[in-house]
Image 1 (tube, rainbow, N blue to C red):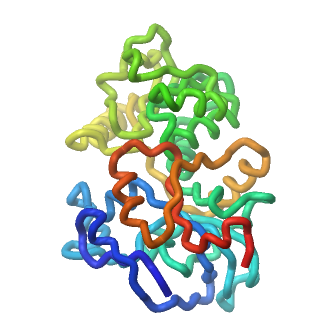
Image 2 (cartoon, rainbow, N blue to C red):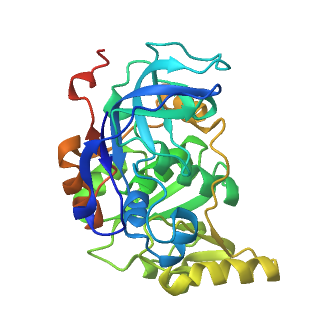
Length: 327
């Protein structure tokens, strides 16, 4: 099968299109014919092994995984002997576990527990949205946001940010979204109650105070944002922060039981894809697609994501004729 193959750490130049063996599903696994995948900040970080300590998880000298990519959408081709929820031909989507080969390939095998049926009427390129939503949902679960509470999302136009705006609105939170000027209409359309153009004003100096401030892109800090927080407010990060400061602050907050700073720590994927499918079918969540690339141009997709300018998701059309759900 064709795949985007990575045999060493480095820039997007190390990603090559090659042939690898087609996987065979274990008893609890599903073999997916991949129609669409994605390239994310996580993929870029794993490609470069940055920060360096990631190598303790991804391979010290070279990547343990030769195919990256967490999000997938496609069709079931075969199922393992113990699999009961799916059958060949089913249109599905989901999120690959991070310890096994990923979805930037024509086929991928994943456990049944990380797969869900495609939302009714959705295209494959609209369903490679799990990773950003997974982190966003982890933030909201950890801070326990409730209806009527006020949350500010910095970086509201990225994959995590667009998911945060929508999922926070789905529970009734009052959302202030911070993004660059060209993206304000987008975040408004996702349900933000108020938008702020961070290129036109310093959002950290506005008069309002919030129950929660979330940095969805790793480009601000607790120290810059703490004046935005109410007395019991929480700063949540989806990134380690400069020099790992968010880790240290989160640890200190835990020790002192102030819980002023947390880092999103997603747990198991089990059940999440089904949860997201329900939100999509209820009209409470939708994909925001920035760019699409064919598999052959995936290195260019990595280069674009590394600019830090992407909006929503970057889709890889692994099988372009499958975009409308055709076999």
